[in-house]
Length: 123
Image (cartoon, rainbow, N blue to C red; front, side, top):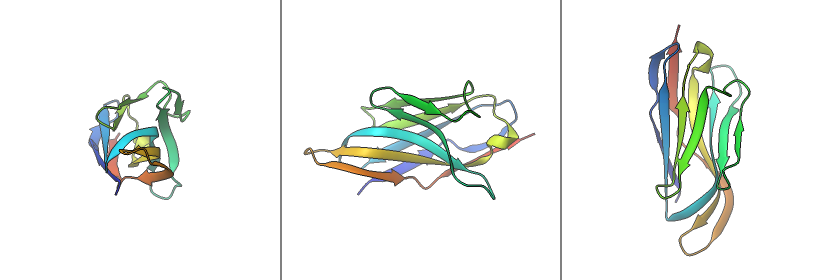
């Protein structure tokens, strides 16, 4: 069973920084794509950033130049460094992983979601 545990959310003033972490567990050997999405109140969930094993990144235009996604494959962990945070960045942030290879070689093309961590930026 795949579990994703996020941490690092909280309350920060505008201009501040936060670092989110998401650790995956469940006899996983590797993950193709790891990423972050967010949902603000009254809005649809949107992509923030994704990172593949081939180091290909995709960022939302609204976070380019401010957020950096990274991953530690040995720890099966993805990070999101968020700098120059603005009130409009306030949202629940969700970790997403897709394309899992389990120990033993089985490949699972499904994607999985974490439970979310709240980020609140005060003006």
